[in-house]
Image (cartoon, rainbow, N blue to C red; front, side):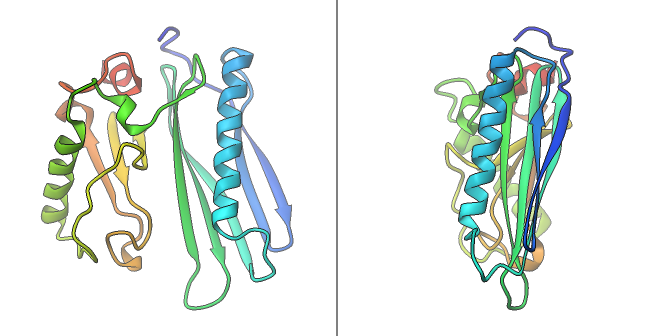
Amino acid sequence: MNGQTLMLPIRVRTMTAKNVKIRIPYVTGGTTPAAQEAMNKSIAAANQKLLKDQGFPSKDIQQMDGTFEIKTNERGVLSLSLLNYTFTGGAHGNTLQKSLTFDANTGRSYTLGELFKKGSNYQARLNTIIQAQIKARQLPLLVEYPGITPDQDFYIADKSLVIYFPLYAIVPYAWGFPYFPISVFEIQDIIDEEGPLGILMY
């Protein structure tokens, strides 16, 4: 990666309809037009999938609120989370979350597996760390810990890889999203040094 001091300008588009307000981030500069377009297309597609997964459009939707959080925007790495809260009645609504991590110089989006060296057996390593956190934090699991997948949800923040699971997936709703922060220094021997974690580690 070049231009490691790169920080992207982020603006917000707002989509409104009856009982619906969706705020969508988009990159307005700071890199090549092609990289900018690639990132914005990925963000828009992820937002559309959240809407679809929440059943939009539907007359049953009483409230829908889409927001986002920028987790990392430095040194040519952009990592963000899109969140969509929807209420259709009942005791409480449902929130879905999708995170994206980019090489801002190229617009490439990374899956979890692409952050690590090939053949590193990163899944077993991360599972061991997560299971230790579950035990230390005494999380009340609804099911036996399922382990992570190559397309597991994650974001990067504060020199940490943060793995998370959907609501209801492994812990009760009241516990919210279960987040598992893992310091890059704890896993530095298996990180792909040319990828986002490697760039942020040094």
